[in-house]
Image (cartoon, rainbow, N blue to C red):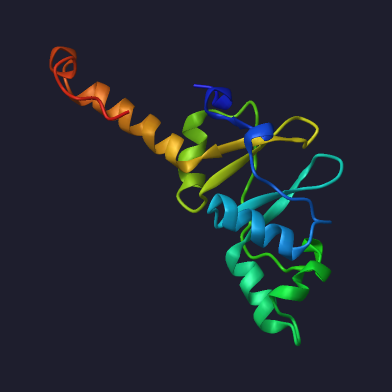
Length: 149
């Protein structure tokens, strides 16, 4: 199955630009309760992922940096440790299972490396659950059982 069915499109994804400030990222992550967000450059290319941990370590390891002056630090100057591997739009869902073990989301790019969205680990797990459920439980029983998906 092609991954296009699972994509959360870019317009629905919370992301930041490398030219955004630490404070913007912190506030956005707090508002949406995310622990990691993609970084997309001015040309629309996926360039990495910034995590709460990256921001915390930058805050801890930078002399005189506090929350108030995080507006002076650009995300491009924050070392990132999470290397979320992107996939191309023509990938198959089966290709994503091993990647999703270590990533909360998988960035999706087109043939020009332009960021077009993400696939959430929860969507992959739900797909696998449904696949197993459909293979293990006979159809006549499925119709009488509460469906969690």
